[in-house]
Image (cartoon, rainbow, N blue to C red):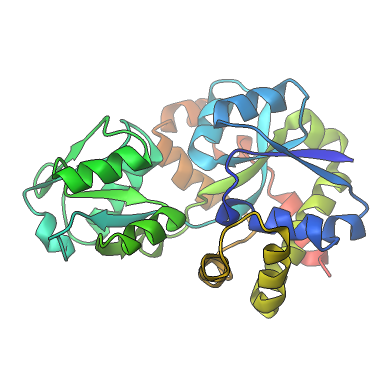
Amino acid sequence: SVTFAYQTPTLSSTLPLVLGMELGFFAAEGLEVKPVFIIGGPTAIAALIGGDVDYTLAAAVPAVRAIAQGAPLTIVGGIQPYIDYTLIGAKGISTVNDLKGKVVGVTGAGGIAEFASVEGLAKKGLVRDKDYKILYGVGNSPARAQALEAGRIQASPFSFMEKLELERKGFPVLFDIGKVITGFPFVVIVSTRRKAETDPEGTVSLLKGMKRGMDLLKTDPERVIATVLKKKSYGDPATVRKVVEHFSDLYSISITKGEIDNVIAAARIETEAKKLGGAEKFFIGTFAARALGQSR
């Protein structure tokens, strides 16, 4: 029996976990996985350190920051190696070039939204402070949507689920940031070093169960959709179908040194990481490698 924490109830963030539990993939690996909903990444990390949960889903950037600050944690696998942000424009903004001389709003300085916006726009040829400005402190997703409507900002990044709602309201999609920034694990699976060292087989089994759910997304998306709709917890059938179709090829338990290096750079902790001994001190890649080699 293991406890697994997650911080957002959205389907896109938890789909492999849901499939592993609902379709018996974890049970087939000898595990009883108990999900625990914890609001907020810092609270989930604290629960992990305190021994209240065994694993948690976490955004990769705050996870590596916590490890750099001395938290006894390690990344044991990936789940979403894809930045789930789409840059949405204000009404009247139809292309990336329309943002020249305009303002892009993000929640705060140093966050993943800022990184995704700046790096994504750089891939599209726009340079921060030369072609556009970043505005901090715009707020959460509803607040940023209001700022778009009011004309305070001309673009902002939103998750896939938020994008669907904003599209319905007539806001233009400028581009999918995850498609231009590659090799970046957006969400990872984190455990304590003690758990990883004392129960390596359990960790591999957990990842194998996750992998089986990810495989089913590729091979039988209709079964996945039917399974999710039975729970009646994730919205209407059209939305569920869009989520499954969009994410079917985007999950992976794999985690590599290069990907962790990219997260460390995004978190701006290169100096701290070097003092600790580099990317290898932030993750254990053998678990995912074994699960990928042995999964049925």
